[in-house]
View 1: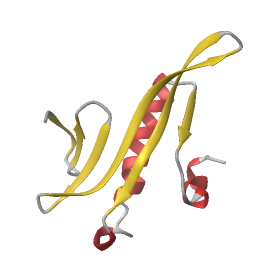
View 2 (view 1 turned 180 degrees about the vertical axis):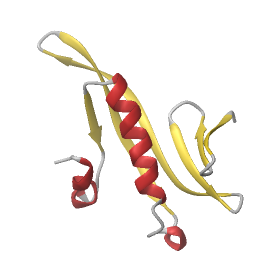
View 3 (view 1 turned 60 degrees about the vertical axis):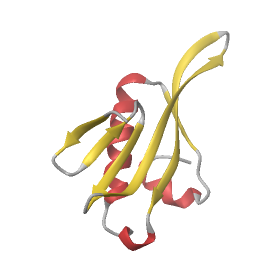
View 4 (view 1 turned 120 degrees about the vertical axis):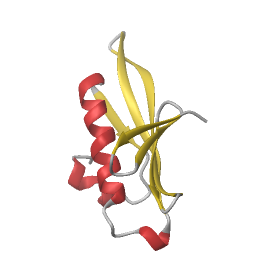
Length: 99
C-alpha cells in the first residue's frame, strides 16, 4: 500500500482517494473521496462522492473526522463542481454545507 504523509497531524493519503487519521500506529478515522463523471444537460461534470466516513468509537469526539472532512472538501472545492456525500445521519454533515 502506498502511503503519503499529508500533514504532521498524522493524516495520511492511502492509495489515491482514501484519507486516514493514525493514532498510536493504528488507523482510527477514515474517509474516501471517489471522483465521478456525471452527465448534466449533455455535459460531463467532474464530481466527487464522499463515502466510508468512519471513526472508531473509542476515538470519537476528538475532531479527527472534522479535520479529514475539511481536507477532502478543500480538495473537492478546487477540482469539482459538485460534491455528494453518502450519509446515514444527514444532520452530521449540515455544518459542512450539505443538505
